[in-house]
Image 1: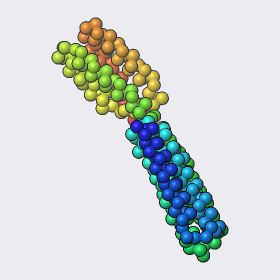
Image 2 (image 1 turned 90 degrees about the vertical axis):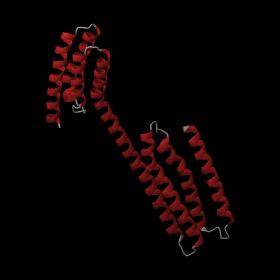
Image 3 (image 1 turned 180 degrees about the horizontal axis):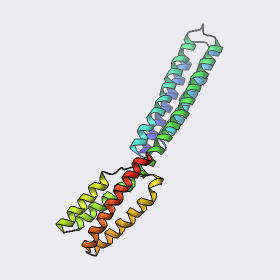
Image 4 (image 1 turned 90 degrees about the horizontal axis):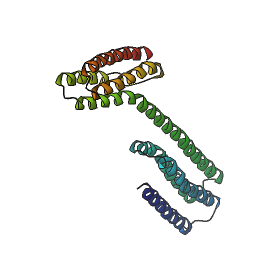
Length: 229
């Protein structure tokens, strides 16, 4: 699907480039300095759309990244439209000096490239931040799944209720992790593994004690979370 979109974009760009050339060379205007400045910078603006499209969507492996790529792509489109409008004005309004045409075209190009770099950098920062947040939330999410699986496995109603309470304690704990919580989280994970082994071997009395210990560890972890913020 991604390759189809890229091919469609390239075909559309080629068609637009051909149409642009046809229009430029059938206009009843002299091939002046303004004409060639407008032609060169407008052609460059068209070709640069490949760069904007590639930067916007080539690494878009998720729907979220696709949406983050649209602002970059939009900058390229806005730049192209402005350059084409100014280019035709420069050709049709003969009182515009060539130097002025060059300056405006260079400024438009400069703003487009700055927008490309800054927006691309902002997207990378957002993506990296979201990935870090997802990693930090994984600890809680993974333990909640473990508790739900254990709860489904046990047939004992009383123990099932204890596991449900423990799952709620975990679920409503602070989801964010940090290096300062590494030691206590490592202890919690070890306790959860021990709990799984006890449940698998039907040692429910010992499993109840482990559940109490895990709950206490989470209360301690949540207090440390508040101190670390």
